[in-house]
Image 1: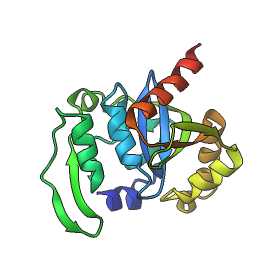
Image 2 (image 1 turned 180 degrees about the vertical axis):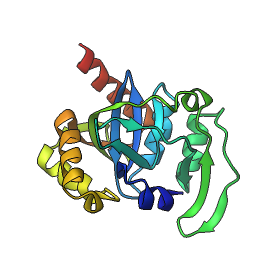
Image 3 (image 1 turned 30 degrees about the horizontal axis):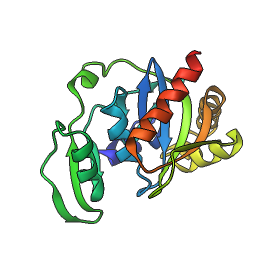
Image 4 (image 1 turned 90 degrees about the vertical axis):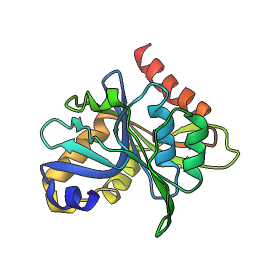
Length: 202
């Protein structure tokens, strides 16, 4: 499915990123495999944040709004048990072992989020998450120039879109605050994200 979307949906700028939303504002969470992106996404989605995608940010070429992609959250290896412990009521698929990524299971997206699949959100934060064992949750401001370069590296069709891709990505960065985020405990991560929204509304 990722291949089909990234190769054909060029009416969007497509980033390899999780996307969550609260109060109409989207957090774009780009990160390489193994960074804890999907685990963080799953934790936030089950603590009051709306799931737009755990994998692909679909950004409008006309107004930078982000379209939800209604699908389960893919979790791997230790993350499966972490989320089972964090969200006891969560519904999982069977675990598939011995894949190229190890053990993989799909976490069902909340029905209330699927009901809002037509509701887009505007980007307001770009956060590069990284799980670090034992780390205190910490948001560190990141330069917009560096953030744009890294988002470009995480885009599937940036080069295909050419100048339009550059213009859209520039607008996303202009509209967003950018941070690096290190965490180890999901409750601390949820608090850090909630504080960003609270500060914006203060």
